[in-house]
Amino acid sequence: MRVLSNEKIALNIYSLTFEPTSELLESLPGQFVNINVRGEDSPFFRRPFSIASATDDGIEIIFEVVGTGTWQLSTLHVGDSVDVIGPLGLGYDLNFTGSKSLLIGGGVGIPPLMFLYYKMKNKGIEPQFLVGFKNTSYNFMPRNITNVNFSSDDGSLGSKGYVTDLLIETLFHEKVDHIYACGPEPMLSKVIEISDENEIRCSVSIEKVFGCGTGICFGCIIENSLKRLTETGRKYSLACVEGTVFDSRDINL
Amino acid sequence: MNDISKERWDVDFSIKLGSLILKNPLLAASGTYGYGRELNNILKTDDFGGICTKSITPLARDGNEPPRIAELKMGMLNSIGLANVGVHAFIQDKIPFLQSLETNVIVNIAGFSIEDYIEVIQLLEDIEGIDGYEINISCPNVEGGLEFGSSSKSAAKLTKALRAETDRFLMVKLSPNITDISKIAVAVEGEGADSLSLINTLIGMGIEIDSERPTLKNVYGGYSGPAIKPVALAMVHKVFHSVKIPIVGIGGISSAEDVIQFMLAGATAVQLGTVNFLNPIALTEILEDLVEIAESKGIRNISDFKGRLKEWD
Image 1 (cartoon, rainbow over the protein chains, first blue to last red):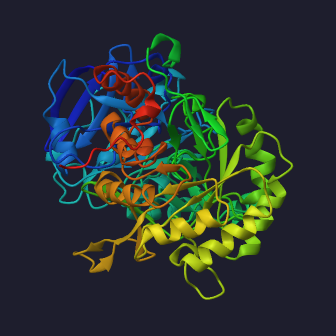
Image 2: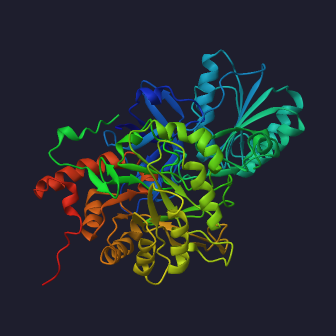
Image 3: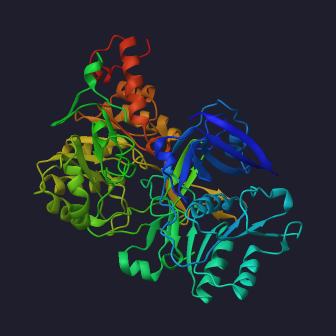
């Protein structure tokens, strides 16, 4: 696929768009593309990236440069070709239930929620959006997303502390029917704990090391909850094809 | 979707593997192509010369605890632990799709006792659409704890027991984690195997410096990918000079050049394994490149490459 744009949008954070295919235009928030970063010292496995938006203007991913693979991606120019498979995995259920949705994301876990936000807006739903960054330099929230509450580790953006603190505070004075979350695992564990305490439905998007992303290597397993174990007879689910989005009641994080 | 019709090429890809006719010498390796259906919307499973299913055991298995895969510079480690749906669910849920395929379906079988293997074969014997069995002998035998494939004696005993159960094409997948692979190959041939596939993964280990722990929860795993190709080539070459039955080469194959190298070393066919994880359309790309190489060398039948390796003067 041809690269249409590749811009630095925050500290170490890039937004890369590439040509859409008809399949990619149909992709759902929570689905991902698996990219083969070809080049010297490139990683052995492909690298999965959540889709941040999918329009006729291109398929967008947002990534932080953390290793050789993402560094190589950041050096791609307009017109370069990129080896992409996708969309893969199952996305968030778009049959929104209840009246009040809340999105909560941490760092580069936010992009699939941005995509979800756009889908909700198209359906006339205005979700509350809570985001957390290390500090203000990492903030890449686009201006067209409104109703956002920020938190940062050092207080340089929004309230100081974890985004989960923001969640507790929000739930103290607002009624929420469904929480959609994506971010680092410790954050997700906390979000699930808070959802359970408040008896709120919670959907989380999980990232694991994917050997293939297509459900054939059986490497990216996540432990099923007792409920799902009883239903399926299986101890594990595959994060790539049975996720990346799970109902929090189905898994043990 | 890429349409691979051999008519448009001047190279004949079909090969004979024992009693089987393959439309091309490329099979999907066990454990790297699921139950044949998972990638069918990306690349038609039918385009393979054959598919070896995930290892099937009598009962369903969840496999080992995570982390159970890890990436390395030129390969990967896995300790999946034979996760599979078990033979009964395999028959009910997976066989119907496999029966619809117009390619050779080879069911890979694993077990922890000879009885395990026999049980699976007996349940599959009357089912149509299965063209053969591949026997995973790299499993620990509960009686004694050693892998079936670790000695000529135990490998031969298992082969003999399974030969008595089936007239179908029977291929034994050899482990490289032994002293002399040709001894095992000869023993397995002597008990009636129709073909040998080699090599299974090499035992390997990763260590994390930060946590000072093994990378895999299982500590040891199977090493696969391009890094193991030279080991596999040497073993195929050795076995080719030790047995008469056809050999299916496996080990880090990811290009047409690799395929030809294995055939020159003596393989009749090859399996694509880890490459299916990285590039789900590898088969198509390799077949296209094979045509070019064959044409440039004036080869009309792909099988002509087999064992053509020249000696140094």
